[in-house]
Image (cartoon, rainbow, N blue to C red; front, side, top):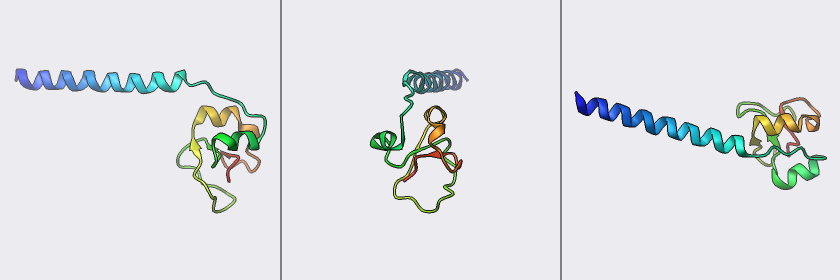
Length: 89
């Protein structure tokens, strides 16, 4: 019984530490607003998607978009076709 409790406690601590680290790393990343799609595509060739499950309205693209809600929201003005992917290529 003590072994099960120790294992459960250790797993819980490891899980909470991992989630905290991922959240802090994402929060520490500064969100950049790009002037236009040319500037954004220098760093993110496929553009920036708001979520991983969004579909491109324009058809097949050459590159897969980077997924980031915060980055998309900062550059929402660059999403001309309103498909939740800014500056897709």
